Length: 175
Image 1 (cartoon, helix red, strand yellow):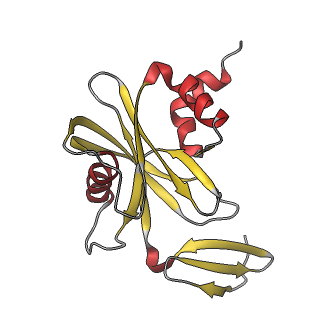
Image 2 (cartoon, one colour; image 1 turned 60 degrees about the vertical axis):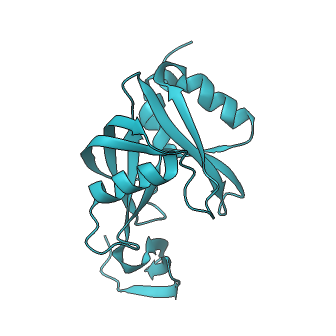
């Protein structure tokens, strides 16, 4: 733990680069947070998305997710999850459940995310996100996830760490 003050090295519209003692890290601007959605339908299929991610220089396979409070005052994690699920995947959910707050890269980024489970899914549109997002929606049987993720990795897609939630048991199983 350090008692040194936090300095802002650079600030943009969405992120802030900070320094505290020897540590350099990034946080979201304006205390914006994120929600990540595990959406599983009644046939035990999970909804995944892939989209181009500039920092990676390629498409990334991910859970649907979005920012909380970036454009909607009074937004909650559950509000954002419902909105982003419909926008990105084209599915409305009948129920959302907060599964907790998590950090994916705590040595470099202060940002965390609220993990949400969405159930009672109904397809209402094609999804795909906003005009500038170019999101591809995947509805994958949970039993096929390890092979699906391996196929996408072989195609050159990056794989978001949050997918470990769905792959954990299969990754650790002995062959």
